[in-house]
Length: 232
Image (cartoon, rainbow, N blue to C red):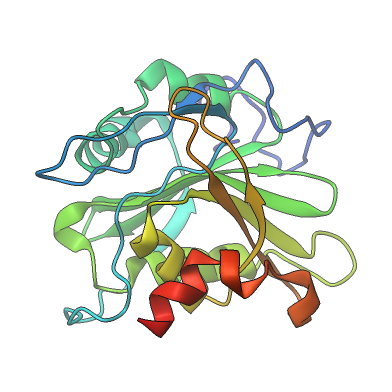
């Protein structure tokens, strides 16, 4: 959902009927997080999260770049596609974005700095949660805390009385993205076996919940690659 008159959808903020995890109208997510210099092992899953290789918080950060986060509009598409293509080996097309954004419960937002789009996110509104479909920061602007500001924007939309959590899926090999979301207080709550159809690769379902989690609600440590990565 974007501003009124763009992408052919309403802009009044009302969420339409929620849909299942794998709506046929949303683009088939081609799930590979781009890793320059290495051949990507492809996989497909409808409705899966897409996250490029992000900073784990251990690399040196650049100076904080303050951004304005707003609804995506049609004229943003060229810069959004550029960031998408730079972040993912198997990038969404403009038609893929439009198919998602024309659904009443799907919202696109961009992070803007100095009149340029430096990041974007696509998420769905469900009855009790937000589900992130696509999330990326332009490579030249990474490690400036733009991703953290985007996550903070999503968290600000939660309440204890209605939508009280954010969900997303991160491929099992994408440790930088896992560590990024863990730094934002997300927890890995499930291992999604054979989540990507073409590769058979597993994914972690990660969640942020208002009020936090009990340890019993997270995946067991021996199977939690995130915990193993931190301990190394």
